[in-house]
Amino acid sequence: MNSQLGHNLISLKTIDSTNLYCVRNLQSLPSGTVVVAENQTNGRGRNGRHWHSPKGKNLYTSILIHTQPTSQLTMFVSQAASLAVYSTVIDFNLNDVWIKWPNDIYINQFKVAGILSECHKLQTDSLAIIIGIGVNLNMRQEELKQIDKPAESLGSILNKKIDVNHFLQQLINQLDELFHEIETNGPDRIYTLWKSASPIIGKTVNVFISSAERVTGTVIDLAYDGGILMQLASGEKTKFLAGDVSLAYEPK
Ligand code: BTN
Image (cartoon, rainbow, N blue to C red; front, side, top):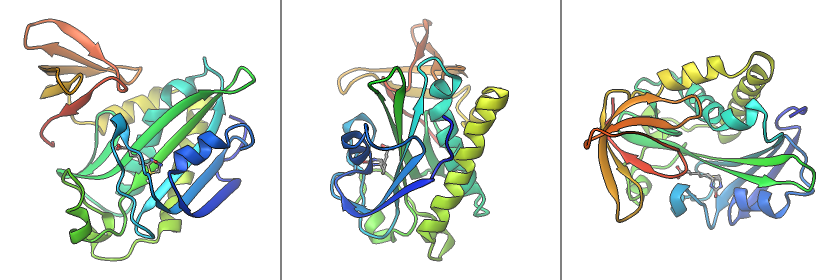
């Protein structure tokens, strides 16, 4: 990666989506760029969903890094990103924080943050990875109810205003450290920490393969590549990858 995260910080008032901003400017933005916006008019979530992005309330950021296709950083970027958000939230002395596979951050049964990573080829042989992170920081209960799934914000739980810039700085520091760890010592520690923050092994879960197809099974393990190993109700053992399915299961 070769460059510190956040050395190029782009602060926008309003944008359709910080991820889309990165995609449009992919060739000119250096690796390590952090884009942050006060609001998004077309915030995007995983699986084509919308990400609720009211003005000045939350963190909406995209972090751009250049990697090599075969590097360990490329394979573990998503695990590292969810772990960085998880650790930043934990540092607010919050209990019952966990990662819902593959990379949603929950407090109890409420989602507080989500990650949308995308990968694009550059003109060189490198890849550009855009890590889009949305964290609910200061939405109040009335606003949280507008989200179609149970959601919370840190400020509402802690009953205080959370400084968006401070949260972003802490998050960037965490992510920088984790990327550095992968590059110097390999991904084992990140994989172990990510797995222990994701309490899903042994649970019965519903896997949504498409809007029309759903299977049920028991989780056997979380794989090194971030996939989920399951024993289906039919007895068949199979692995699902993060980009292909979504899950429903009870919190820990
Ligand atoms: C999800 O859980 O569905 C992922 C949500 C990701 C939202 C963030 S907000 C900043 C960045 N820009 C976007 O349009 N989406 C991501």
